Amino acid sequence: MEQQQPQIILLREGTDTSQGKPQLLSNISACVAVADVVRTTLGPRGMDKLIHDDKGNTTISNDGATIMKLLDIVHPAAKILVDIAKSQDSEVGDGTTTVVLLAGEFLKEARPFIEDGVHPQNLMRSYRTASYLAIQKIKELAVSIEGKSIEEKKSLLAKCAATTLSSKLIGGEKEFFATMVVDAVIAIGNDDRLNMIGMKKVPGGTMRDSFLVDGVAFKKTFSYAGFEQQPKKFVNPKILLLNIELELKSEKENAEIRLSDPLQYQSIVDAEWNIIYDKLDKCVKSGAKVVLSRLAIGDLATQYFADRDIFCAGRVTEEDLQRVAAAAGGTVQTTVNNIIDETCLFLSGSLLTAEIPVSKVLGTCELFEERQVGNERFNIFSGCPSGRTATIVLRGGADQFIEEAERSLHDAIMIVRRAMKNSTVVAGGGAIDMEISRYLRQHARTIAGKSQLFINSYAKALEVIPRQLCDNAGFDATDVLNKLRQKHALPSGEGAPYGVDINTGGIADSFANFVWEPAVVKINAINAATEAACLVLSVDETVKNPKSESAQGEAAASAMGGRGRGGGRGRGMRRR
Image (cartoon, rainbow, N blue to C red; front, top):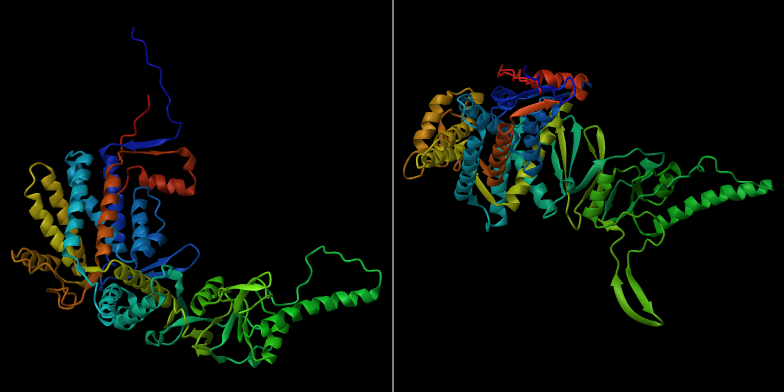
């Protein structure tokens, strides 16, 4: 009699495993479903998404990365697309919808091959080769904007910014905002810190009422009595930045002072007052006309400064204070002692050995004023000596609109910064995608074997960008794509810059129409999308730990157990 094999329990009870082809097809379907969500937001005629979260906040956005962040995706494979959208946003700033769309399309093209029994590794190898060839071709087609005069460079950068803004809510005023963004980025120079460009939102007015401050602007802080008696405008003032409280402080809790004589109590009270007056006096003696502090400036200090024609503001946010320090050239002080703004003398014995300038303690600017913007008052520092900062004050009707305008300008700022650093641009409007697609199809014909088919399908996937641009604008995508294919196939190569003309529904030379984007956007998008597609293709089994069966875990399980749009449930194998 045959001895029965004892059952080996490898995974704890309740563990769900799904593997094989159905599992992979399910993951592909989940990723394609995510790409379908952002598909309609692509391009100048893209629609916006209104997302209502569990806290009751409403966000209206056209930005791929914002939408992906706000969608609470629980499917593990589809989360990869959220990650690549985030990485594209932090690395380049624009092209977030493009990268999700490309990854989804690469997987969609791979699906029939997987169903026919092609091994995923063969597909991945071909996709990586195609991605390398595509990136080489982009570098070859890119046009440098290096070595131009500052005026030429400004107009070229403004065109890159306008291309980015054309697909956003504020696309109607893209020229107005593009020049503003370029001026802001040029103002901060080579400083890499994005927070050197501040954005302040003031509801009311029209978009055209937005303005750029060549310096720092921030909302008037909470103020005490005496504030209105302070002067609100100074020319070439000295600015003192503090990180201390200028108000009477009660003792720390449980502090105990024992007195033997009631008269001593008065001396303690006097000492408190003397300390605060001593601090205020030192601030005044420093010669500063504007005093800003991160912590509170009390009513006593406010009145004291008002009597001496000094402007003060307490509870200034850390970010604004740092930007004032960078622009005005001062340093934030944690004490009011020894605030000197002179060169420092070093003595050795009785001989004067060296005269070393200390780093500036007080900052300065050409003009400080308090100005009314809408129903808010703003403190504005302009004409700063180091000039390494700028502030954009945004106006608009609804709060959601201003929020979206801020996100759009963030994308444009990132693009202009990238274009300044990597000064090569390519034609937008789907032109570069069509050209790479043509090049890859041509290259595929030189390859013997199955990879010819795979590279061909990669080339076909790239056409999703111009096709989607047409669909979103309501044009006949098949008709426009055929025209583009014919133009790009010309042997002379003159059709390379031709892309979709959004205004007429035909095709046009994107370069001549100034639809440009930095080459780094496309390179990054193709790289990230190919990586994501290969990552999804390389997964052949999913094991779900029963520990995660909380409310969220159950949602993930129902989405993941191979019951996605692909329909196939993976063969849950019993472990022996």
